[in-house]
Length: 134
Image 1 (spheres, rainbow, N blue to C red):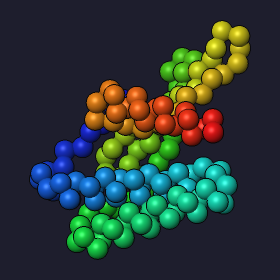
Image 2 (cartoon, helix red, strand yellow):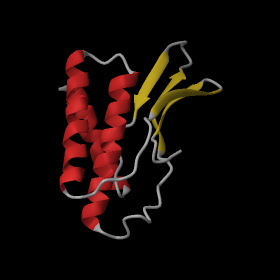
Image 3 (tube, rainbow, N blue to C red):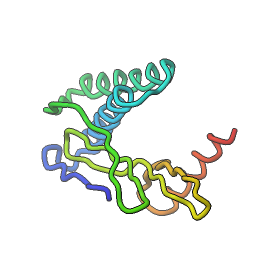
Image 4 (cartoon, rainbow, N blue to C red):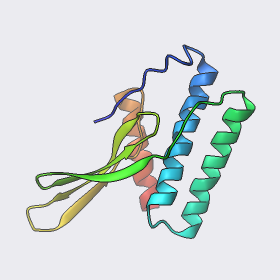
């Protein structure tokens, strides 16, 4: 399940939309850096994204009123487990899923990206697979 936000506070300003997305990325990166056992190198990369996106929004004069931190949590549905992200802005989305296979092993799937249409989403999935296997 993905919840799309109504961005009434920024109207239809394309630049503000971009910075809103950057802030959402920064919040998710901070949550992942603080809530996982990522390596120190990966945490530095995530925190650099937080700094870059927060700085860019502030320089552009867009300073959203955000309070609190995001959260990662696992939700169980029968033999499915969903890793969900909850942003302080209200955004909620599944980032991954693990499920029991017929042979008793568990498979893990990770969301590779989101696109504005099915072709863009498929391209992001193909890019992620190429990156993981390279």
